[in-house]
Length: 213
Length: 213
Image (cartoon, chains in turn blue, cyan):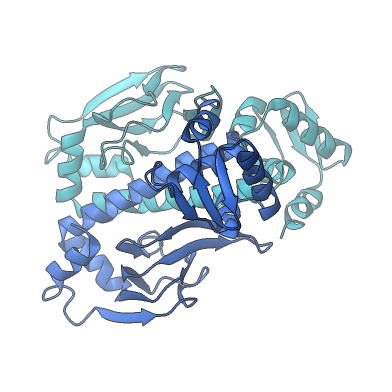
């Protein structure tokens, strides 16, 4: 079950009168890093950007998400302040649930508890791989990996990329991104027209990844 | 409650005849990266090293632990292979619990489910901070931070460090670690005698951290 279904299942039970729908527009924040987690939020529709701002002002991009997602699951159990900001990049619909209801829901609905537990495991697994990859693999590897993922593993040959997001995702700057993209273009692996990427040669991209294994 | 207490609470209930004690010696592995999670393991006594080996053979050190800890909580829910290896660095006592019992235990004991959930959140929070820090802060920052943590925030002025562990923890090489330690010695922040570190000037170390904020 996804979060929307889990809400539907409980809305006349433990969630009765506890679910507050909210709608936000492009650019608005649903969560700001550093605030205490009085509520969790479930994204039902729209697209959000999840990022952490460092003490020196860099924005580390955790990801851009448009699936039914829960925010607050990481912070509420230990009452930690929000690690990331969550900003809408389109019109978004959320529901907002106070933290005590969230905790009671965890206790009373094993399907929900299992889903939350599995999602935490997935996030921790991904961030562990990403931490190791970021440490040991060069920038070129990460840019190629991002291109392959953006193409849904070569299903979509043409798409646009946001270089600033890409730089923030990898933890680097736009100049370095441009350098790699230019190299991939001159190798005829991709063609690049402003923010439009077209994949010309998947083999070159694959071998750019594989040479690190 | 810690894991040992949670085991004690359940040993005549859901864990009856399901808990297998094991004892391993220095150097033995309790978990090998890449294996399927048929069991979870609770460390009761001793010290372990938790690390991930990359495709090119580097060992990324997640940490060295001597507290009551659970391993397998990350992998069992999604049936992922073990991300890390767990190797004893002293004689260790564990208990081993099969994954189906682990799942039933989660379902039947809310204290245990809460503890597992909180620990996953703590690990994810730590790894998120570490991922961001590793991206943006220079090596010097990480070495100083490691020294301050090893001294329990300056409570212990003298201690030994393992340079290889430190290099693997930060994701770098021993040569780079030596360069930073030498610089800190010539700044009279620390004195270094082989693997023995003595803190001479906490202010210099603190300002080495603070200048990045």
